Amino acid sequence: MKGIVKDAVILCAITLIAGLALGFVHEITLEPIAAAQLAAATATYQEVYPEAASFQESDELQAAVDSCAQEISSQGYGNVTVDEAQEALDDSGNVIGYLITSTSTDGYNGTIQVATGITAEGQITGIGFLSIDETPGLGMNAQQPEFKDQFAGKSLQTFEVTKTSPSADNQIAAISGATFTSKAVTGAVNAAVYFAENCIAQ
Image (cartoon, rainbow, N blue to C red; front, side, top):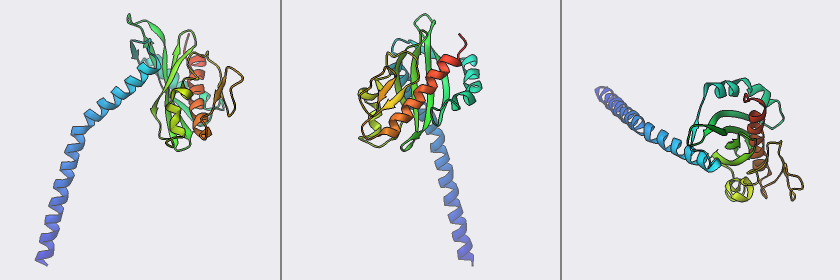
């Protein structure tokens, strides 16, 4: 009986020490992980809106994100949300446009988070991916210029996916073998466009 109690005490001590060690390691790595995620997001923002010197959140834009959530979900773009909106600033701190982050859960493997740059004049500067985990060689090709660059330079409008060669300015050619991904990304961009046109106070 004493042996069992002793073994139990030793096991508890080992578990406690291991738990404390894991907690300590977790706390140490939290800050570097957060810094790496921020750096990756910032790199995507600069890729999406290269003319911007910096990006800035504002209480007004966050209020618009919150107040327009229901409105955006009813537009028929799929299961999409606008998560965040930031002002795109030039070197002098003037607002030259917006960086809008939106998410679709209609991807083939689930969630796709897209950053869309939109100028103050109502033109898309580009799109980039903050989160995507689609099928390699198929849906992951959304990150390739052949697909994502179709949005750049276009005026704000509701985009639609086509499996054939686009015959209208608002049509986006689907990725071969990845229609789900193509529609999910396009839905996320449409949500960002709707937000820019209808939810930001001009």
